[in-house]
Image (cartoon, rainbow, N blue to C red; front, top):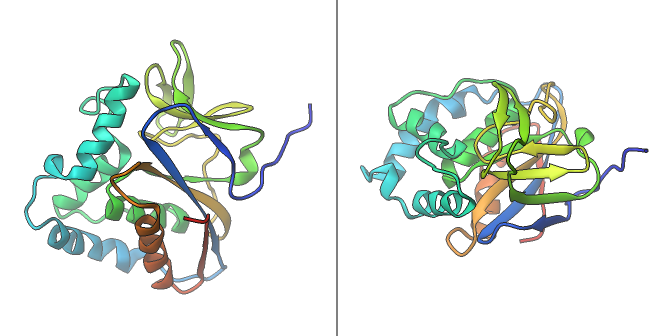
Length: 217
């Protein structure tokens, strides 16, 4: 069967109540600006934004945790990726530079306090669904096999390819330039799509050689 490529923005069936997904297409030129300075300044800016408020008390963090629980997943055992990143930044640790697209994705995630994932669109095909992981369902993550049972998961015709906990090996980006997709897992009614889109524009506008297209908000 031929692989069915999908266009941007993808159409997604949401089978988990309370979630909203915001998709962005990120194009990065060869020789684009270094993300290092922005990563290094993130702890200072983020801690000013938090003003000493405990991470667990932030309303967006609490909302994301609630959506995890509704799916049957304990967010203190399987932390949302955004919370794991924010915990590092609160300690004053700059996030490591990985690849430009990954760096922008991580900066966006910390600023929004919601999980965000970066995806190679060439590796995704067919219909996309956000649903609860099934017993025995496994995704090959970048840290090895990951049990998806009762966890939020994105699935296409080839199977699971993303969660708001860890990234998938199948759809990872591998180059410093080119086109990728970003997706933010937003708790509906708590964080607006327009605010999430504005923050990504703010990040990308500060980086020469980065261009973003965001689905209508």
